[in-house]
Length: 315
Image (tube, rainbow, N blue to C red; front, side):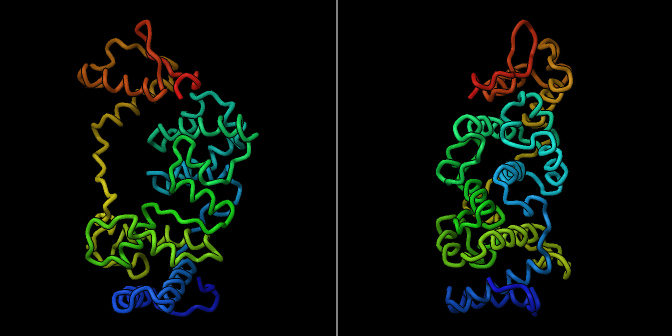
């Protein structure tokens, strides 16, 4: 990627030139260079200063990557320093009771991630002496860490030029290199990413793609903001990986969250009358509670529902 210092240019015009050049010439060295120059200028003008980008501490990056899964950056900005203040290292998180971890996680949603992070911390503490292993295959074997998260942890901790695809990266490549295409597969994006990756500065390269992809999602027509024209659709709608998220309001996920909040605040709650209080019919409530048991959040007995503290039995 070209260095940002001294760059001149108009971002929309540079973006247009990359798209047009690729359509007419393919991925030539000149187009790759234009793409890198565009990204360098983009980061200079619009790159975000985020706290997890100011560190190469693998544990801090591990926490941020778990938090950023399916959660807006603005919410993570609040919870990230709070969580690290409470659990400053792997050992502190591994020692903590699950109820304490879930309390610290409140506000981020998708509480399964908190359990997965807690289980991951325990395994790191037990098997790796509290040091996050920076081997991608090993990371991929931990709860809650897939290929993309493993790749991100390695790149942002070590600046090694790994290939990984997450939602914002996918959005950028579909927008630039697959105009009008439908059902674009990651296996089509991967070779382009491999050929365009800035191998000298992969950390900055991926940060830029993520910022660019985030703005592409929120196209408003603002010349000082996103580059997409007003009304342009989210490029990820054309991804083969796209799945529309169901509404949160009234969902099982919302009911799960309410049950957990009550448990975290009170320690235990009565099973009897819970469905009526939550306006959830008995069959549906039973399914939700069984799911919470299966996922390791709760135990039931004697007409009471309690948080499950023994994570060893729920792994």
